[in-house]
Image 1: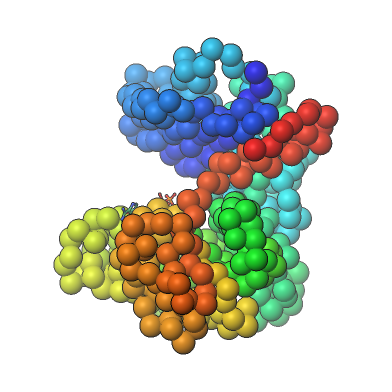
Image 2: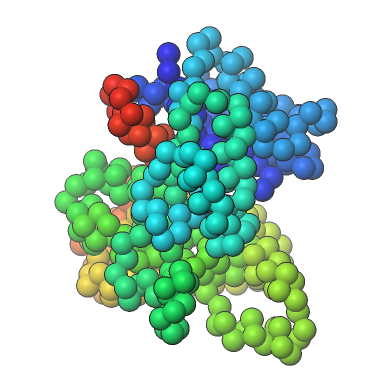
Length: 397
Ligand code: ADP
């Protein structure tokens, strides 16, 4: 039996999922977390069995050794393992990659040149590729980019108002979470094709959060820009910020670039505002004034972006919630959708609280959906397509 493995390698973790290469059924999914500190491997198999293993015996310290532990777990869970292709989540595809690519040495070197554009993610994504090349030398490696879905933005949504040489050098609004948006729009095409073909806003609300304006199935705008810092406030990232604040912090307060980086990436957002946690569940449970304010700001920014996106789309046919918060936090969805009657958008409170797929009321002109995103399956689909293009027959689910 042939399989496709998907990997999402971060600084201290690797998330993985294994798919049957022909049916795209998923027998195992899991992650190694705590690389460099307290590594653990957790996984769930198709028959619902959960594993959680401490890897602190000193043998697992980097991506290569983590991948060995993952492979050992896969081999223990399945009788017949033959990983023919590995699909990788790669955060940045720069200007040139508007679609997934099969990796060879030249491509890998090219993707390394993009590290300065995403220094906190790209190096780890690429070390995941190197680890997989070493572990599966005969398998096809496919890179799937988080920026690719946004590569065809109209110029006004792609540029900043800087002299054009900066645009030409690649200082652009790339947008991220593209694999999630692509999966969501493909799912919407199956469940509500007319809406999917129209004016859609997708809110990916997880630890990282962004929104995407989609028209005719194509991304036309993202709240994220040159980096994944812009737009909505996130678990620990600040979201939209006047660049004058950065200048002030540097020039008046004497903060170094790395101090500002830490502030904006890891000490801000829900965590910074609440002084409590980056985790929405904890904030909802805490109910303190600071937690409330953090949630209020989060909701306010989503509403503001929704209005802006409806304006650039000249109306709205569908709003989709996804990501850990979008899929599970009914209160947040309720607050986001309040008082949008002027746009023809009204939630059904009962459906929303129950977390149904369609949560708008019968008389709402805008249909509101909850779609469980599945970036791993999107990567597996792309990888399967590359495998098929290379001559393997396939029946995509
Ligand atoms: P990541 O971006 O790391 O993949 P997720 O998409 O898993 O993150 O989202 C994590 C966020 O989802 C956390 O803030 C978590 O609190 C929130 N979340 C998950 N389940 C719930 C829930 N039932 N109610 C409120 N928030 C939730």
